Image (cartoon, rainbow, N blue to C red; front, top):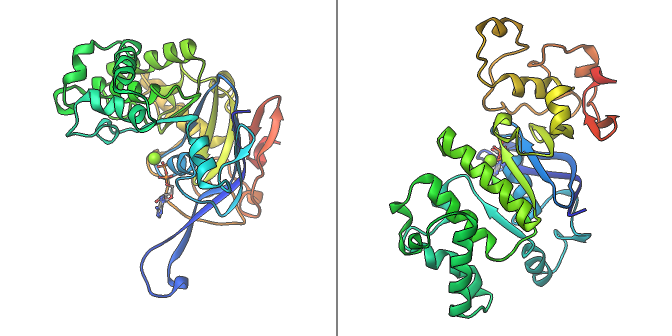
Amino acid sequence: MVIDIDNVTKSFRVGSGFFLQGRKKIFALDEVSFHLRENEILGIVGESGSGKTTVARCILALTGIDEGRIEIHGDDIQSASRQKRRELRNHFAIVFQDPAANLNPRQRVKNSIMRPLILKGVSQKEANKKAVEAMEKVKLDARYLQSFPHELSGGQQQRIAIARALVLEPDVMILDEPTSALDISVQAQILNLLLDLQEEMKMSYIIITHDLNVIRYVCDRVVVMYMGRVVEIASMKEIDENPRHPYTRMLLESSPVLDPRDRENRDIQEIGEAKYIYNPTSCNLVGRCPHESDICSQARPPLEEVQDDHFVACFLQK
Ligand SMILES: Nc1ncnc2c1ncn2[C@@H]1O[C@H](COP(=O)(O)OP(=O)(O)O)[C@@H](O)[C@H]1O
Ligand SMILES: [Mg+2]
């Protein structure tokens, strides 16, 4: 296992007020468990606010957790020493949604790509060579090494961000909404590039997105999150052909439906940002689920394996 996340809870206090009691406690992650396998492309999908970015930050130990355990190749990163954490982070590369956030606007592309290498003590000459190689990998002409980020298109900037992520030869890439800021056609190009690179370099990916359709043709497995909880985990094929959780079906149906007659048969409501209503003793989907029954508001559905390698947290799926 490359990453093993076991029962992780992460809360935040939000709102103002001198007294802690006056502030609301929200659970960005609520007993979250899943793992990343070797050479796998894992999607994490859910609406805005479901806890996806927080998971990524916890995996990298950029933020602490309240409870649970996160292992990177068997090592607990959250309770590791600073030195050990740094070592464990060397396994990772991260690419964010906003191309601008990945690159320093005042630095030529070349310097941005070389910087992580120089920081690691690699010589200028060697770093230069690696920068040129990285450009080849992301299929960009080496002349763009001399450009500034603002001179490039969004797609080119994301390619550079990926090139920069690759120079340290990570075995895991975490991509947080890597294509959300791009046009549809460019999105597909970047996803294809990621697929090629994964094959060539034998990496594992975690691709985070709010749009299940974006990762449909890319992911091996999918973790579906809703308001800090994992509601379903299965292979992409299973999710496509046999989605078991009502929320997963909502996400699938939130894609544009081309045949207008199909709209009538849709299960549900609008999709967008999950409204935070925390109830520790009920399913988080109560009030929004078309199938709910009494038990849904009396207890929390645990995540259970309903089929081989297919996990669902829903009482109605037993
Ligand atoms: N630093 C923070 N302080 C307070 N609340 C936060 C913080 N980071 C995230 N949250 C809250 O945690 C929840 C999950 O956020 P996030 O992980 O960013 O979701 P996503 O990436 O799925 O949109 C949201 O309700 C968000 O407002
Ligand atoms: Mg996010």
